[in-house]
Amino acid sequence: AAGQGAYSLPLSELPGVLLGAVTTTAPGGSGAELVFFNIRLPRLVLGLAAGAGLGLAGALMQGLFRNPLADPGLIGVSSGAALAAGATIVMGNLWFPDLPRSLGSWTLVLMAFGGGLAVTVLIYLLSRGEGGTRVGLMLLAGIAVNALAGAGLGLLSFLATDEQLRNLQFWLLGSLGGARWSAVA
Image 1 (cartoon, rainbow, N blue to C red):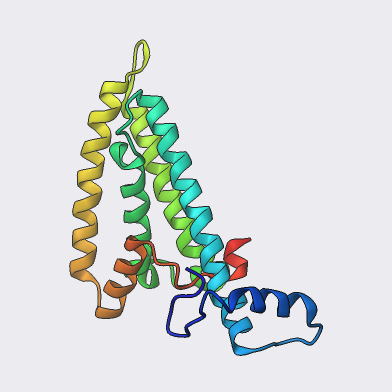
Image 2 (cartoon, one colour; image 1 turned 90 degrees about the vertical axis):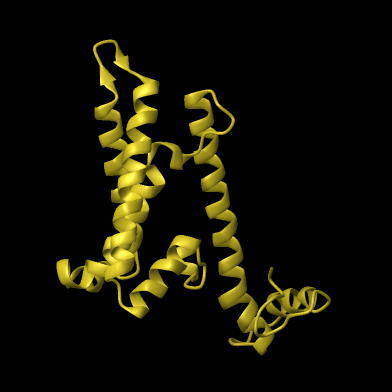
């Protein structure tokens, strides 16, 4: 993964790039070092962290529902996060014009987290009964919320400009194109 891209870094050169970065005291370095340490490595580390987070979320859902096929999409958490991120991408400049200036690149992350958290709370409240939380009702409410969020994403895709639609699709597909060391931290 660290060698693939528009600027090819053969696997045989990667040890030399790593060794050159450790032994050289001058700032900058070769083009291969700059590409590897400023573009490829942050994407690789962020991809590993995102995969670990998704694996943990899946394991928690499987434990909660006692079903090896359960995932966060089952109760609508991921679709709620996607809807909030989509609304931020498409309608954010109309609703919150100063938010990207104050939060920077964290705007989309925080809005997606807030959407997932809001759906989690909603599903929890809908599944409460006299005897506590009912898992069956949680599943049904999650499936309904998942369908509504999917419809909302469809509407946002229809309303989006070409650039917004491209950004929305890249976000939904899990693009790591904007990965920087600040995002990794």
